[in-house]
Image (spheres, each protein chain N blue to C red):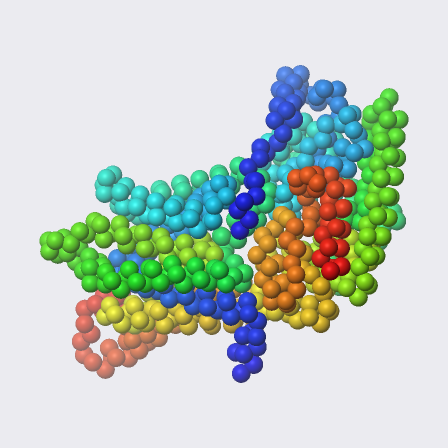
Length: 292
Length: 312
């Protein structure tokens, strides 16, 4: 029991635990759509794009998350617009904008002098320095993201799986698309302090991807992703405590371990699937395709 | 976030930058190392603002000193910019601290093609008790000697020995300037010792952000119960923070001292957890805005902050 209880005696650990679990929850919910839409690298692009926003906020002297939010939402919308207008593939638009915006962040960074050690903490996050104010902001903004998903549940689902049908039935798919990208951007902004620009894409993608290996049903996939994400956050933070290693990276490694374990053993792609296939004569097409 | 602080400053003073640019042009046109051409003063580059100030105090109007790490910058993880390399290329003389603090200077000197002599102020000083970074034998030596004003005086003596022969007819002025400054440093040393002595002895226990203050503590009678980051840029893990908090409670440390060039978040986290006050703006590796714009100002500032926090 000491293994579990001793760290809880430290208030900073409890705050970090809550922050990691909250970030895991929100990221897994939004990440489910991200994985199903096949736009995982948008997460990476948006998080890197937040960097110039953070630096600019520092220069102007406004709270960092305002700058991060403006830059992240702006870039996510720009990816949407560039993709449509320039008729290039989304991954190309992402590649161009993500490197460009991050380079602009480094450029801005090199123009300022001194007192900016904080900025680099955004690259890897400072989960252990989570303050009570950070937690409140995380809960409020995370709640906003979750509430939006809950209210627009049906519309988002329809637009994700059947954009043409959704458009035909009168839904404003473009508008939903933009709103969704804004939600991704907001999710990333609230995750920056805890997990950092470089690793946040894992929080967004890995739990949802692991859940996808376990189930094909949307609701169940999201619920599984949330459970996996929170479990990884808690396990990772405890491991980092007892092994004396970086917390954000350990959480991501635990998520990755979950993914690999499910991939190898899981019911759809792994050892269990093979056993089931051996027993029943004809596996369905999806499983067969996925395995090869 | 320390959002309100004025952050945007030009990377170099405008006129100094212009002079350097001119100097580069001159030497490029003339071919080969030009004799002291920047207003007929010796062009000196120092790695940090602290060392630059020591040189400036000794050399006065006879030297033009620039620091590579800007004020408020972080020396351990510094990455020189093209204008830094330009300054190194046109320098007549380069001062570094050595002992692993500013090893990046070696690459900068090579890359810039500079042939100026490089003097390590902190290495092989007589009358100095070097402290290892770690208590284990064979560990490297802690480089932050200058935070003991008595050791800073050793730096100044070496600066005088270096400058005086080069400066020829002005060497008498350099020696006089050096002597006057050494006297001020001796006064500063005595003042710091007396000021810290105002704190009851059992309260003179602190936690510092990075391993910058062992010589300061040794000289002025403080005990360092723990440090927050082992090496700048390497944040502690949750377990390390928890153990540090235990050490603070066991040692009865009275305050946590963050440093101006680092994020205050970690220092706050540790101090809150241990339930002791936090001071987030000691100066160690870099100077700042007045009154911390000189070495003497920095030591006075740090001593006052320590006394205010511990003698309450």
